[in-house]
Image (tube, rainbow, N blue to C red; front, side, top):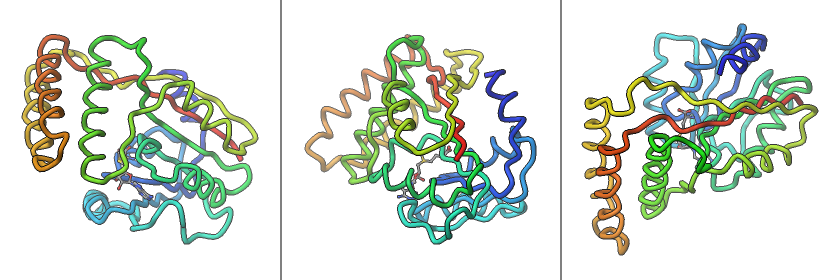
Length: 237
Ligand SMILES: C[S@@+](CC[C@H](N)C(=O)[O-])C[C@H]1O[C@@H](n2cnc3c(N)ncnc32)[C@H](O)[C@@H]1O
């Protein structure tokens, strides 16, 4: 984590695009860790995310736009930095998104990707995060939203090596969490689970996903929860 922070501290962001910005949390991270920046733009194709992020940045010089990441409105080389976080596994057409990000990035600009991984060599508490995330993903899939299982490190490496970039560095990190058994945190997660699965009460997979949810609740209590490992790629066009 320290080496990654040091590296990011050396990058001058310039005009930064955050793709699939969701609630805009990656913009907050990049605003903190990049050496400097001139402007931030976040895009997302969901009205709900756009409304949330627009509101979250109402008092800051950050613009949020509704846009499909496979067909961006900007011309080639419009950005000094393009970024995407925890969204590769949400993309219906991942190749098209990565290609668009490369197109709107200027030559010499930075291509930043942060994505959680599912490799089994993580702590039991981190594996709770992975299993929960995959459960959420399967429920989203029942609702017709693209949400695949998260990738392994090797799969992410392969995806990123296929992007035409001049250089590519990779780091593994995880967000620190003091107490995997923090009762307040565990309770908050458990409270979210029933309403999440109830949304598919009419689906043929409802009973099995509900039963799996109960097993995961037990695991949360027994094993605890910690933030899964992520990979961070820094590429240069
Ligand atoms: C996990 S969330 C984003 C997380 C956020 N980047 C972060 O780091 O906190 C994934 C987002 O991808 C968005 N999304 C999915 N497909 C998209 C597309 N084709 N174009 C733009 N946004 C897309 C969804 O609407 C959702 O807000």
